[in-house]
Image (cartoon, rainbow, N blue to C red; front, top):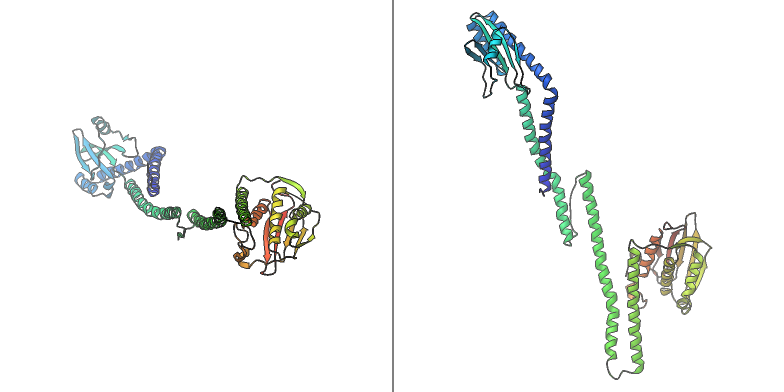
Length: 451
């Protein structure tokens, strides 16, 4: 089996060209054999008549000398017979063979007949003609040699095949080179090296393939970076509660711990265990949302009522800090997954409460156009920097890490909210300035495409 692409290209070309040439030759011979033979026979006959006229006009010795110097002898061979057999011939064979002449054919020509003896191919053709000279009647047989046009055609085809083969050898190198580059790049990517430069300038299919490959490489590089950050974030988020659990569990084994400290250690262990459980649930939920198997269970619901219910459900979080809500909600019907959308408002409003100052106000408003509804949830909290806004919807990302201890959380809520909104064919964005609060704007279609 031929495994090399270069060999395949060259082999396919040679087989195609040589096979096509042979088939074309046989087809042409089969289709035009009769016509070619007729034309050739006519040329032989005319040449024979010219020779006969020379012997009619000149004495035999002069005629022989004249005929032997004719340029046409490069294309024709002449044999002359009498009743005793071959007496003379004109023309050089140059290694070519001539047709056999039988005594019967000689006798027929000496009797005055003109013979046309055809072969199965294009050449040779044998013409027998009576030749009257001063020394008596002779049987002249004229036979064409391999014609110059045929020889030229054969040489042309041979040279074409050789030249074409050399050109395809060179062209195949340029054809296969970018594919070899892609192969080497694939091996380097598989080994974890994403800093590969292809430098393939070709156009057409190979150029498109190279550009697509470079785009894929950039995406893989980005995914690898995200994977490393994900592993680092998970390790960090898991390590912190594990350290606390391990430390306080060891402390509990020590003797002489007061009862109040004993209970406080247990509360911390339980709290950290719940934190790990919540992070695990968030990871699982986000993984399910990102999978292609996730299906929305859409129903018609009042969006304004759903947001009010979420605010009421988390009342302990905001009432304990004297946070109030300024709501401008109109009755709007949408078709969406009730539970998933409920998670979006819980996560966003929960964040707004978390980062608001005590006694602050959270503003919730809605507006509707012909096809969409836009929900705006704005707080008056610490705000988000412009740099952090670019990554605020990434998993585990926490804006302002210096406050990570003060504002507890895994950094998964907004990533989950964005994925749910995307599943509803909507989009979410943030508007914020440091120290001036943050506003999250969610736009949803009135009728979900999942319906």
